[in-house]
Amino acid sequence: VIGQMCGNAAFKAGDFEAALHHFTRAIEAGGDNQVLRSNRSACHSQLGQHKQALRDAEEAVRMAPRWPKGYCRKAAALFYLQHYDDAEEAYWSALRLSPNDDLIRQALEDVQREKSSSSKRALVNKVCKDMYTPAAATSRSQTMQLDGQGLTDADVEVGPNCHCAT
Image 1 (cartoon, rainbow, N blue to C red):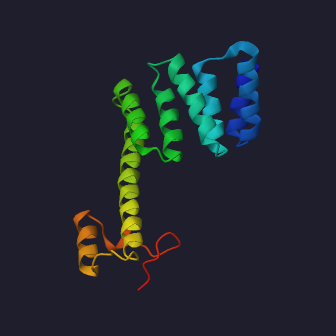
Image 2 (cartoon, rainbow, N blue to C red):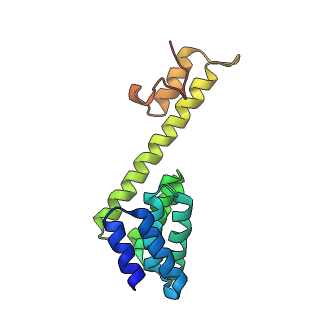
């Protein structure tokens, strides 16, 4: 209990390394439960350790499959690992358990928006690469391919990952 209290205080103060340490010690001392796993998952996420965050979130879900927060932690880790389909599925699981939770609904919408945006970026990068191959299509057909996917000029950015300079 003391480890969890110290971990909560450190997390609230923004000292995620200390919070991680306290939650880990509490788990190792035999107090392992879904709350400690969820809290440690949040620490890992704050530290950019998303694979570790996912492991703890999955363990929280295993321990308490009817607890929406475990699925939210799992979804957040998957989101930051750019596994958008899996993140969306995890948020749906949380929402089924807590259908009136507006924060879960908003997070689900954020994942869906990013998923759509990510698909568009992947298509733009593919089109950009294709423009510089010997079998490249004409500029007009490239534009039609982009327009057919619902892309706008804002989606097509010339940058380090896309060499579509005119």
